[in-house]
Image 1: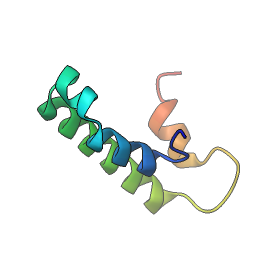
Image 2 (image 1 turned 180 degrees about the horizontal axis):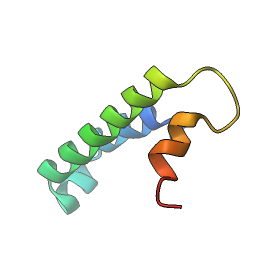
Image 3 (image 1 turned 30 degrees about the horizontal axis):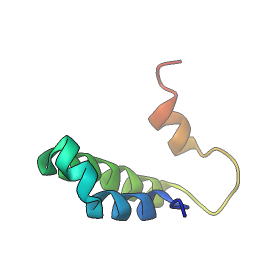
Image 4 (image 1 turned 90 degrees about the horizontal axis):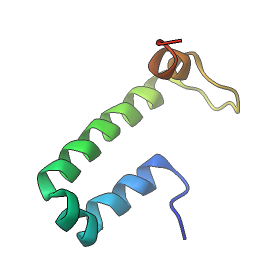
Length: 64
């Protein structure tokens, strides 16, 4: 089964020995840390809604 959330995916990533061996533990830890911080920012800004939030627009669409 694939993870159904970013939090689940990060848990799976941190525990995946094949990816740790391939990318290196330092990279996996750094990437997971960055994404965990992103998730925390999202939780602070979002509310329970199915629409794209203002946080998501600012975070991902500022280049457009």
